[in-house]
Length: 161
Image (cartoon, rainbow, N blue to C red; front, side, top):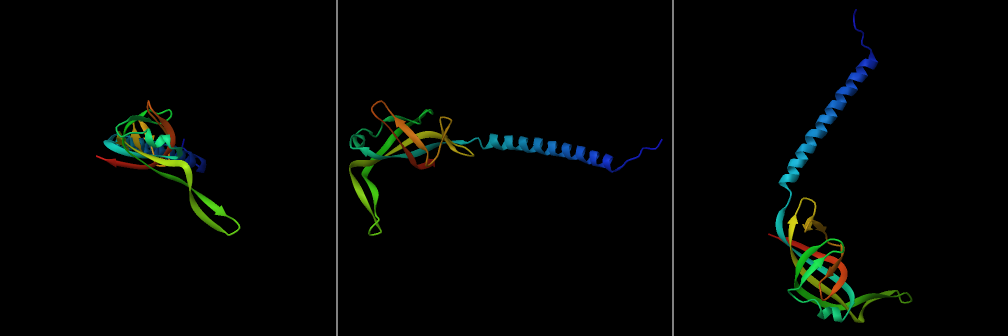
């Protein structure tokens, strides 16, 4: 008895071959990605992080001191050491609708405080991490120590070996 192949049999065989080829491709590419991830798991670096605390009262200009051990993050625990503190008068943009102008004015008794910290970090493929927690410019974060705590935004992140 002679076997008969029709178009339906050919389509089924083609589909099985494509499924096997796709499975092989995904298996090989995921193995290669794992190997690349192991190679690029990151290197240990020093991260310099600057956090801005906007429109704070004057007492916060005096509390952060160089050498303070701090923890960055709300839920995350990212240890760091304060290396620099500077501040400037807080400013606000005022708009005059009648004249159609805008001006920048200082807010009395309010300051923008910038705290620069250094921490041991890992420069990974996708992000810089401190204590297995990613940190990025623009992140809203808390910084706290025994003497003070505040909430601000990461404005600068630099890494060095």
